[in-house]
Image (cartoon, rainbow, N blue to C red; front, side):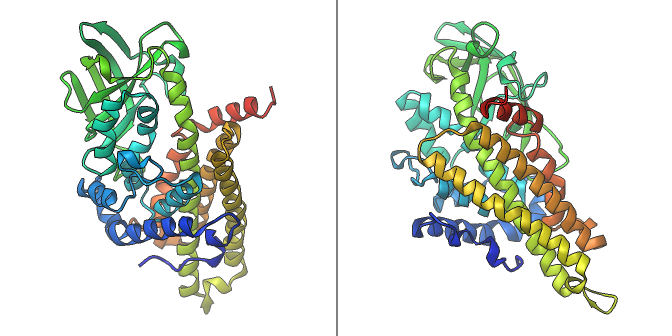
Length: 390
């Protein structure tokens, strides 16, 4: 059973949260507690989770949150999506969350730039959980520097031929639809295009990768050897893919910031439950001032982050694009998760060093939040430019 929730972490008390937002939050929480948390340790140890979970998530509308109804989605605003991301993260198994949500970083460019018959063929199936989507941008030779990618697409009769490789691709092994960034023009951002590649395409090879954390997520290296892509599977205009990718990054960074916050909440709640029950030197841990102060300091960091992310979601709903603020929030969420996981594990002592808890998984997983979606150093530089420091 999950630890009791701290009333201080209740988003429902914050301004701007509506009954619709609370319904979304409650529905996601019920799904996580019923379908994910009972299996979290087993799935993490197995290094995977059942494909059936996608269908279950699709049946309750989880995969379609924020997407248009005409494609099988459930329209909600950015605040609703924020609450959903936090609830998923509070389940305490980042690998499952990453795998279930891999479509969220590939479908928005498809929605914005693909031909209508392609959107109809791909999006409803993914949102229903019948097929799986993945985004393939990062390459072995460079991570955050998207504009320097070297995978190349050459024109051939009827379409394009892609040759190159991609690295660290979430859902890369079992994805049925892969949105691939490839160079079609000259150097830099202006020569990048996007292509929708079928998972069973001839010439596509995949290798699973073992990781420090996110054990339950399927992460892969992809290799493209003259993979043919029909002309109508180009997403957006030729040499204009970089813009679609960059527009997508705001949402990804918001999701990662929310994930860091949700995991931090879970760590504190589990550490608090332990401190209330564990007895040392004749009294409960919570009665030791040093332990109480650790917990208070963590809560002191979490509460401002709640308000900050809610404000950012409301700004996105108002049509703003606060890229610099989102970069800072993504970094802050990663550090918050790292610090809360570390201090919570310290409170548990030897028990925290054993595998099989939300705290232990967060301690392993936190590093990817400092790398994925743009490394911490790159985010700082982006924020410096966006906030007018340069």
